[in-house]
Image (cartoon, rainbow, N blue to C red; front, side, top):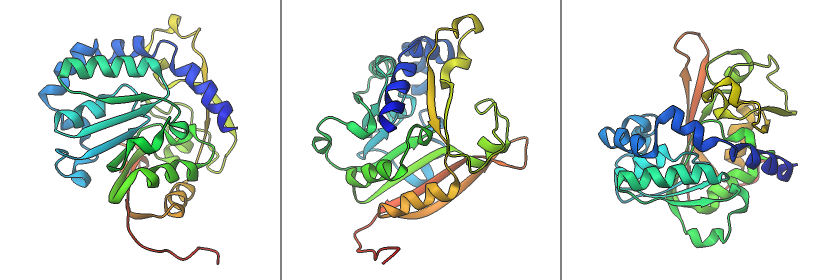
Length: 261
């Protein structure tokens, strides 16, 4: 099933993604100019958990258009991005070049990174916004995170809150299902579709996604030996519901007994 999702989602993310980013952020050169003015702002959810990025090795999984990765690089980090879309890679690399920084951008399925061991270890793994729903088994994702983190390295994960997906209609989540424990595979519009004019959306491929509960997310992180530090819920500006969450977990050097001996 994961292979089916990967094939469908790669096709969706390689149809007009570059065009959508240009409409939303401007040309890569225009985005680079904006990011150089204040690279801290796009990193506002994570800097308090990251400290000074300078000198840190950061792995940005499913890094998309590279906006966060470029900001980290502007602040002195060595950044590797893994994303399934060639169009995302093209836009990100052009923006990075215009900003005067380098990204090691790998176009690949995050669960099938070529020669993964050669990447080495990282101080930080960053995963952000609309990512976990592309996987059918979260333990595979967090096993990858564990493999690539140094001891005392940190996972920083920010994504749409499962409550928002279920009950809250927002700009990014327009069709709440009303079923919190719905674990079926769903077909839907690719995230950047809303950035394109209506007449240009007809030819876009659909994505396949799977929803997760808060408990499943936290348990999957913990099951792969990562030590949960905080689960910060970020409230929607208009409604008394969380819209996002930030989960911070560290890789520690400790033997942990099995949950079910």
